[in-house]
Length: 127
Image (cartoon, rainbow, N blue to C red; front, side, top):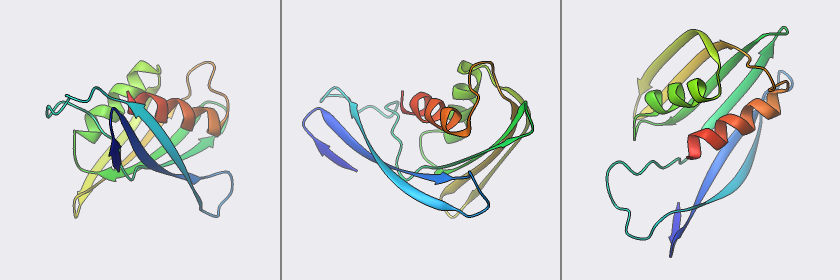
């Protein structure tokens, strides 16, 4: 993570689940932050891996791996609620400072592809 003035550059690793092979791509996301925001409540995303797999017509499996900082479980559940996912199953584990989260949920109206779901979740998690 590089901090320059009021712009924070965050590297996000996304795992493509379009097939059974895991392909990792990288995206750089710039998020504007006030220069004086040093409070503990400031949310940051770093080294987040997001895997999305659509199952059938209505369900999606979401797997998130991230550092166990800034309440990643609560942040993901809040993002899912805001996007109107109906969660059927949720599992969270912390291993060596990493938070592993597995979610099975009903896909909300309007999000029809794995890429659309990934984009919406990343957008919400960055807020």
